[in-house]
Image: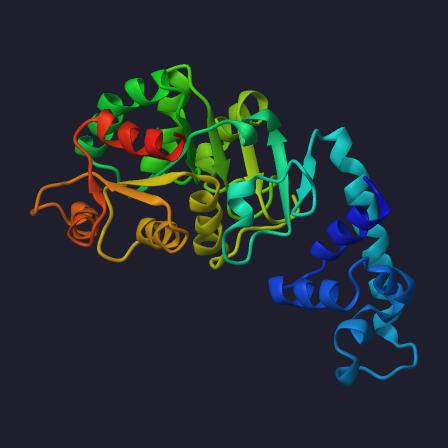
Length: 298
């Protein structure tokens, strides 16, 4: 890890650091040299000079200690087989650079070659998956996997976990984008699945590994799920759900949106049906997805 990359990665470890704050810092200091020279003793003054006096304070030693802890954490990544890909690295997925506020870095564990594999299909849906949703995955996935479609999802309960599991069962590849860091898998019920994917597939986060998942991390990570993918497939979603947030990101990024039609009596199909009303492609067979993905790669 070169000096600039380590400075950027260290910056991402500071609590409550926002995307916009990093953007402003890079805009004013593209190499982050000033940040390094300022040192952790003036870290808060560097970010918020109007809020802190210039003279040393009780914050100084705490921030200095925090900085040392950060660099020790970064040194441990290699030991724990964790890779960091920043937006400035050639390995960073080109599709992801096109989205609104692309993550400054991806903290990754698993098979990094999967980032280069195309096409990718985001598959998301209700955490309360019905038998209908499960049967749809069983029906559609074998042909998708046979055609080398990589499945991207969020390792949540329900449809997300099933999407990862059936991609693996059918001999395919899958990427999980999680909320929080790699050391804090949520929900705990999916820990075994996550550990398996860290060995044979790929798990990603935009947050440093020791970050505990917060409520706002979940909708934020949806932009990465859709951003990595050539299209997004919704399998069961209520009228207000995180799956629809993912679909909206896909629409805004000019990506394909697919939706599984469902019963008008099933509340978990209302959102999916409304997506179709608004222009998402109705899916009844794998070929409905494959023909659109092929158009993207002609």
